[in-house]
Length: 269
Image (cartoon, one colour):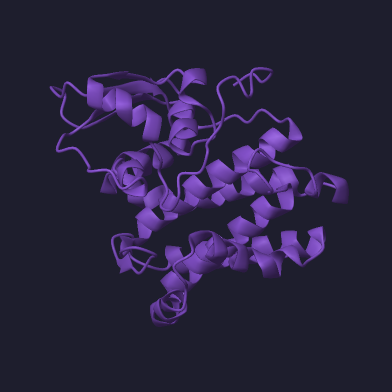
């Protein structure tokens, strides 16, 4: 989003982490082993992924040289890197995994919060302002939190904090093209996204013929590929924007299969 969002992004990141913490804090061992919509991933896998991601963010903010050295040792196989990052956490019992996730999350929040929000920190592809990395953390919490909520049959509610994720997704609108090896079109989109409060968040030139509109929750479900576009109230005008709805993603790496139309027809969202 704009730099006007920067002062509160750490507080928003912390609040979203606490929300997800409440979702998993009282789960029994059977619930931690429940399958989520991500093939092969249980609730424990989702929390382990978040723990590993927040550990990396904390390291990037607190010790950039160590972060660069660590990522320099990663191989070219994205999925293998993810599996390796999760393995140490998945070896733990649920109570210890929960404790470690809380520890990694608190470290990342503290390390990022100690920096000027516009200070660049290293990240996997290119350096990011500390505030933008915090927004990426919120996107991770949203996406993997949705997988956990779906496994548990829980309907989440959102506040206008979700605007940080919307802003991040608008900033990274080209990731879907890059993930598929497609040429990014030379066009500026107009985004008009409705906040949970009813406020309208606007990005891009008002005169653009390529427009994306819809409610913030649905927009974030789209760009994290947690719902199929057919099941969402996100709409596009213009051929390029219409195609973008098919490939939108707010994260690096393989797009994955996404979700099927009607997969969650029995859910409120």
